Image (cartoon, rainbow, N blue to C red; front, top):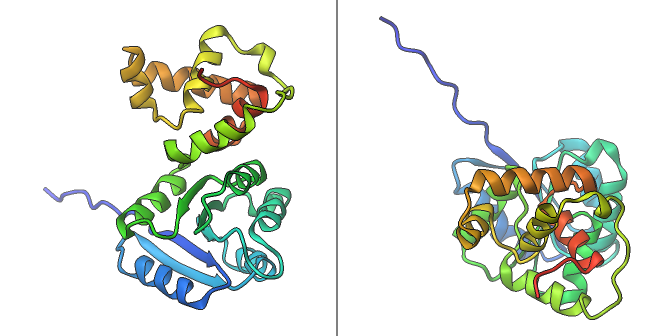
Length: 225
């Protein structure tokens, strides 16, 4: 009897955008040594990054926020505004853990935020997480965002009034940076139950992903006390 052949998993294609050549070199080396990652090209500024995305359509873009010329925030906005580029997930990789940049990046469409001094295995994990369609928001980064912006007046978010009390609760938990499994453990319910409520909330709020759900939660003041 002939066994069924399984196709090898498709490699995650990763592009880089950073104005420091040494940083690009280090990130490329990280990508090259991971068997499930494939280098798709590099750019030294935002304008070049947009051209690169148009030519190569990578799965993930590692993007620095503060670049000369067109910076990372404007690049994120341009990506979000171009329907042809929306399949690329953007992971912001920077030395600046400053809340104004974090929140601006999330508002502009970033799927995650990690620091350049993270361990190589953490960066590789971050790439895999955002490539899978999830958002990567560490609790420390999320706390910075909430701590700064919850002090301001909340602004309305379309669809918020359609959420059930349980869905509102789940959105607030998501804004803590916890995963579905972690939320489930806190509330002593199943991860599937959490996933269902979070998914319904995302549909009602038209949130692109979990990162945007955090943005909506912070903007609306819907966060944990």
